[in-house]
Length: 191
Image 1 (tube, rainbow, N blue to C red):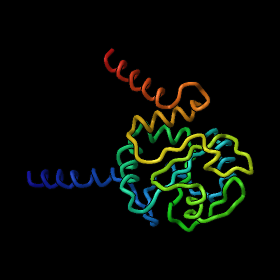
Image 2 (image 1 turned 90 degrees about the vertical axis):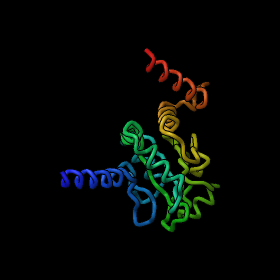
Image 3 (image 1 turned 30 degrees about the horizontal axis):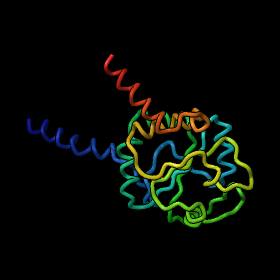
Image 4 (image 1 turned 60 degrees about the horizontal axis):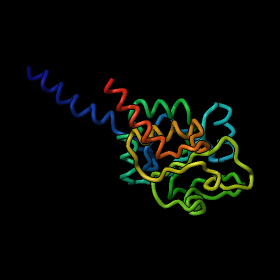
């Protein structure tokens, strides 16, 4: 009996630890669907297109409680993680990082300086890029949508779908789309 209780105690500690987001050497949360690239936006877009996926750039920073929230409570949801895996080519950038990034306009800056150039202030922040970006346009200006901050699983999932399906080209803005999806999910559970 004591062995059984000891085993249960170990499991109670191990399971939450296994579900916690992995932190890299740079202090950022890591997901299996994130790509390790040379951080050349033009190359990343070409590779995303070749795979039939959308390019998403996510800025995070060490110690960001909202990044932790996104990873532990939103990206950890199987339906969200699977949708990202299937439909997005994700490049993670560090708001205060020193790795060089090449913008679509050819300018090469550190991650930190690129965040300043793009006018980014908050983390997490996701930029969703279109399939084609002119060479003289910076990523922040080319983005079809940006999502600053931590949002719950249903909002994030709906945004991922809305971007993937080019909802930004329709007459239904994201807020109306999201409200419609909430209503449809509620109807599905009552039927």
